[in-house]
Image 1 (cartoon, rainbow, N blue to C red):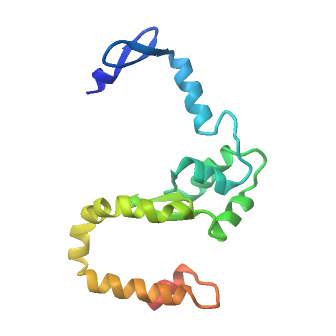
Image 2 (image 1 turned 30 degrees about the vertical axis):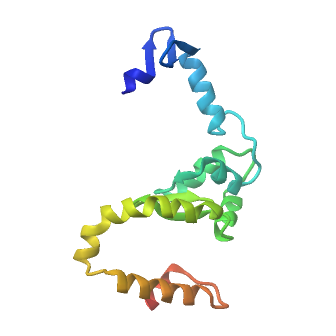
Image 3 (image 1 turned 90 degrees about the horizontal axis):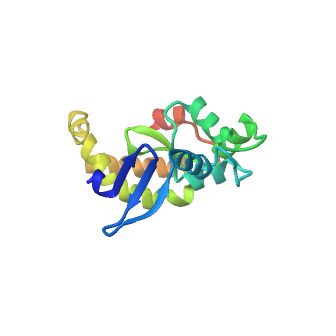
Length: 164
């Protein structure tokens, strides 16, 4: 399948159609486009949340390095500014695509969860059974978390863990 879509040669990467080569790109072209599209060579954005929105999802397993990855794509942004967007909910950190952390934009979380949840839940099914977690427990936990998070005082992970 890969060979049907791309033809590699010393002169570059040729994108093929069923009839002929429609566009030839050199390795330098591909690298330049990648750096531009990932907002590394030049950023069109000023805010950390804008970067996450553009990237759709950014792996954030190592929180410090994930913040650096956002900062790399912005001119003159500080660590505190990135953390502020995170603390204000402009950037979400969740186990979206697999059991590892990702940054996503709040406006994307629902459709992305709907898309990825069946597969992630399939991967986690063994652990759910092992820990005796069933639909009833998940429903109760979601209800409790919702109630806790909608109180008037700030919540922390420690408070949620204690209550749940």
